[in-house]
Length: 226
Image (cartoon, rainbow, N blue to C red; front, side, top):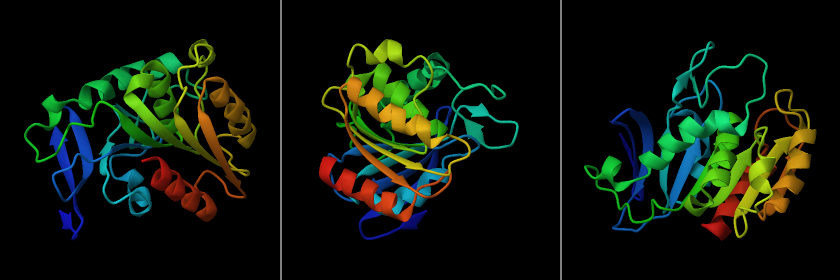
C-alpha cells in the first residue's frame, strides 16, 4: 500500500472483483470516479490518470471481466475484427451497477453514500463501456471522460430518447489514432449532443493515447464538474 497525507492507494479483492482504490482522507462523502481500462488492461492500467483527478475523489478501478488472447482483460467477449454493439457490454454494465452498492464495500472504511451516481473515466474500450453504462442507466452517471474511445454500434436506439440530458462529457482523441479513427470521434460529438449531453471535445496530433493538452483539459473538466 502507498500512502500520502491526502489519501491511500490500495489493491483489493472484493467478491469476484479485482480493484485498485484511492481512498481520500476524511469522513466524506467523497465524489466517486470509476476508472475503466481499455482492451488488454487491468485494474492498474488507468493509474496514469490518478494525479490529474481531484484529490478528494474516491477512485475505483476494476479489472475487466474477460481475458483477452493477448493477455490482460476486456469488457466483452473477444470478437476478432468486429466492432462491438452496445448489447455486448450489458453483462459488464450490470456487473458494475451491482459493484457500486454498499454490500461490496461494507467491510472497508469507505463512505458509500455517493455510489448511486458516479463520474467515469474510460479509455478506449473502457470509454465504450462508460457510454454504454450511461445510455442504459443515465441516473447512475454524472459525467464521463471518454478517452480514445467510441460509442458502440446500436447506441442510436438509446440516443433517440435523449438519456444524457444534463450530463457533462469530455471527449479526447488523437488525429493519428490507428485503432479508433478520429472521424468516428468527431461524428460522436454530434451523437452525444443529440442524446442531450454537454460535450467538450479535445483533439490533438497523437495516436491511441491522451496528449498533454488533453490531459490538462480532462483535469480542468473534472475540477469544474466534480
